[in-house]
Image (tube, rainbow, N blue to C red; front, side):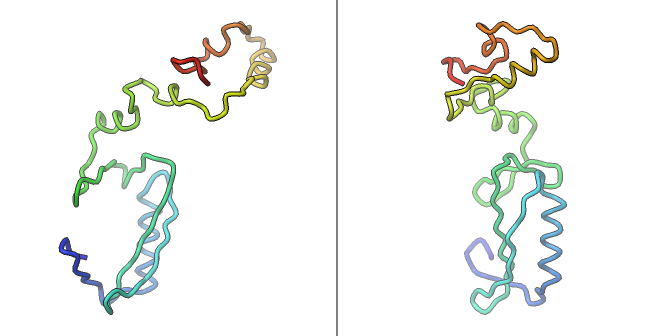
Length: 138
């Protein structure tokens, strides 16, 4: 498709082309994402339709990270990638992500520590292991 929305199509698309596209996506996108790939006709022109959905963001393409801006792909610098991952500017964004389940006990974790002769302070356990957010939520 051109930027004007005109479908160009490709005359020699076939099943091998779809396999090649699938293989390239599998080789190049990390973490791996499984695409839906189909050969379709739009305005009597053959096109390849690729749909990929995943929850393991961020994804890289051939070892590089990109951001979509209007109709361009812009490669992200390490600093830009870090700021996207650490949205709140924290060294580890995940430590400030609140759990949907607040009824947690950590009995198994405490048991593992104790079974390995690691002394724990029950009163400060969650705080010492940074299991609480700044507003003392799990």
